[in-house]
Image 1 (tube, rainbow, N blue to C red):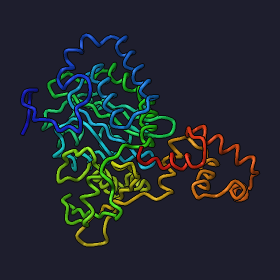
Image 2: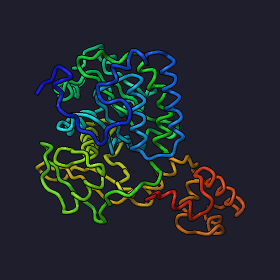
Image 3: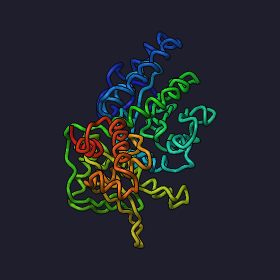
Image 4: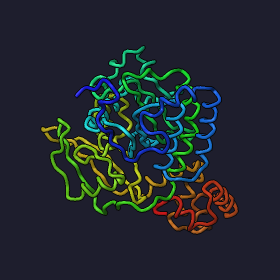
Length: 386
């Protein structure tokens, strides 16, 4: 069904309604808030959010509320991103594009796609406006032409949340087709906020989580055919879907979007697009534990793809938490030995340094992470349930 006006849009699926202005109400504020003063205030508020301790979901809702008042948009989506593989996961938003999620994610996984999220994360600009990139011809984007257009979606503004330690998330903002495109001031505002948003999401990513659906102890395996339809699954898959989608976002067939972003990375790698980057992502489940979602092609004539979901190992967890807290290579080595339960003298011997140097490194690690002892360090590094 094709929609041409605001009154005819289908109900948009929401993980949660963002705080602030309701959808559609931003136009009332547009003229009043178009001054540089208002944009400056928005930038200041977004910068302050980077230093506020709150969970990822609350943080993203506040960011959307601020941006919506300042620049205005109808739909939005805000996924987190694995800083190593740049695969998006654990999205939340307000959008009516859910039925097309598999196709959208597969197109977006291609590095050749216009306004691609990975290319934005790898580039200097960190922000992309679809109308500007395509010179107003939005159909140059396969995502827009084959999916977004049919829902009455217009221009797209994307900004990656990235700081000096990597990319931790992304904000996708969409206006309706009969609204005017995003302008240079809109682009400048979100570009200026990119680093602050990255710092905020990085801290929220490794913060303890409140209780939500637990991930199962056993791994889950989902089989997907070349037509992108599920072909089979182990008994634990549904439990994994709930753990990977604790907000209960109504995805098609109950399959969380990160399944499709991971499958999309596999398909893109097979086409020769950055083949060294794995189809694998680390993600926090609802109960705060870390999990791995990875995709592979089965050695079979029917072209089946397998998506495996399982608990993350110690090395995977330490890799992302050490990166998030900005530990140096030597500090990471020492942190690993502390997690293994080794005492100061044994650590000094293994690293060929003195016990005093070990204590100096530990003090620096404690200061960076904000803890006061080894037990607290281990608990924080594996940040589970608050």
